[in-house]
Amino acid sequence: MERNKGKLLSGLLALGVWQLAAVLLDNELLLAGPVQVAGRLLELMVTREFWQAVGFTFSRITLGFLLAFCLALLLAALGARFPLARVLIQPYMAAVKAVPMASFIVIALLWLSGRRLSTFISFLMVLPVLYANFLQGLREADEKLLEMARVFRMSLWNRVRGIYLPALEPYCLSGCRSALGLCWKAGVAAEVIGVCGGSVGGMLYDAKVYLEIRDLFAWTLAIVALSLGLEWAFTRCLGWLLKKMEGR
Amino acid sequence: MELRNVSKRCGEKQIISHFSCTLPDGGSLGVMGPSGAGKTTLLRLILGLEKPDEGEVVGVPEGKSALFQEDRLFPKLSAVKNITMAAPQCQEARKLLAELGLESCMEQPVSTLSGGEARRAALARALAKAGKLLALDEPFTGLDEESRLRAAAVIRRYRRGRTLILVSHRQEDLALLDILERLDLGGK
Image (cartoon, rainbow over all chains, first blue to last red):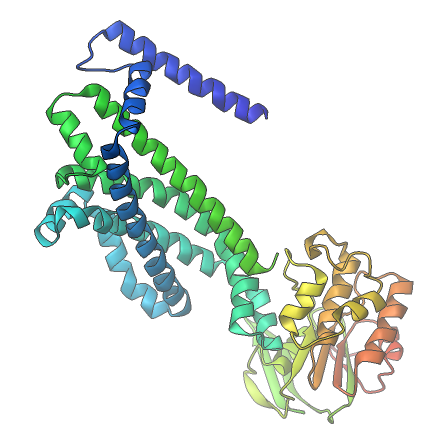
C-alpha cells in the first residue's frame, strides 16, 4: 500500500515537472504539456485510424515476440541439454546483441516489405534476451531433484513440470518483462525507419514530418501504455499458466 | 545383486576400496559406519547414480525407489502430489501419508512442513513407488521416538518383499526393520 502510494506520488511529481517545463518553455513546437497530450490522445482514440494503427503494430510486434519466445525456448532447451549446441548457438546470439538495431533495420528493409519489418526486428531483438534467460533458468534446474527423478524413472512431462518449470519460472518472467519493453521499442523504431504507413511508427513519422508535437507525444504515450499493458497481461497469463502446468 | 571388487575415489580420497558383497532378491542389508565411511556413496553406486572407478555392480533390480539423505521433494507441491508425480500408479498415497501421521498436512506445500514431516513425506514417496529395490538413507533423521517407531512399522508393512538397503549410523534402526545382514564400512 505504502509502495503504491509512493509510486503514485512520484508519478504525479514527474507529471508536474513535465507540465512546469512546458509552461516555462512556452513553445508548442518543442514541448507539449501533459494536459495537451492527454487531450490529443483522447481525440485520436475516437478515430478509426488510431485503432487500425494500434491493431496493425500490436499484432506484428506480438507475433515477433511470440516467435522469439518459442525459438528461444527451443534453442535454450537444446543448449541446456547439449553443450555443443550451446557453443554453436552462442556466436549468433552474440552477433544479434552486438550489431546496432538500426543496421538490422536497414539490412532487413532490403529483404522485407515495410509491413513485415516490425515483426522481424522485434523477433530479432528479443531473441538473445529470452534465450539467455531461458538457458540460465534451465541450467539452474536442481541436480538433486534430477537424480531423484532418474531413480524413480519419472516421465519426461513430470520432470518438466516438477523440476524444469519451477527453475525456469523466475528467469522466464523477468526475461519476458525486459523483452516485451524492448520489442515495442525495436518494432516501432523499425516502422519509423521503414516509413510503414498505417502503423503506429508510421503515425510517429508523420507527426515528426508535419511538426505535430502533440501527436508525437500522444502516440508516444500510446506506445508506452500498449507496451506496459502487454507486459502486464502477458506476464500474468504466463505466471498463471506455469502455475497450472506445475500442478500447484 | 552383486558388487564385485568395487572401488570409488572422490578427488584424492579413496571412499570405497576393493569392496565386494552379494544380496539376494528380496533380502535386506543394513549399511553401517561413521560419517564419511562411504555409506551414501555405496548407495549411489547401487542406484546407478555414480559409476565405480574399478569393479562392477551387477544384477540391480529394474524398479528402484529411494529415500535420499536429503528429502528431495518438490517444495511447492503437497505431499500427495509429490507422491503422485514420482509414483503415478500409486492409489494409496493418502492412506500411506495418514499412516505416517501426516493426515492434517498432506495437502499443503511441503516447503511449509517441519523437518520431520518432510522426512516422512519423502519416506512415503519411496514406499509408494512400486519396484524391486528400496534404498533408504538415514530414514529416521529428524523424527522423534514415537514417529520413528511408527515410520518403522509402516516401512515393514509397505516393503512388500522388496530388496531393502538401509543406510544408518544407528544399530537400533536395523533391529527396528528386522534387518539381520549388516555391513560395516569404515572399520570397527
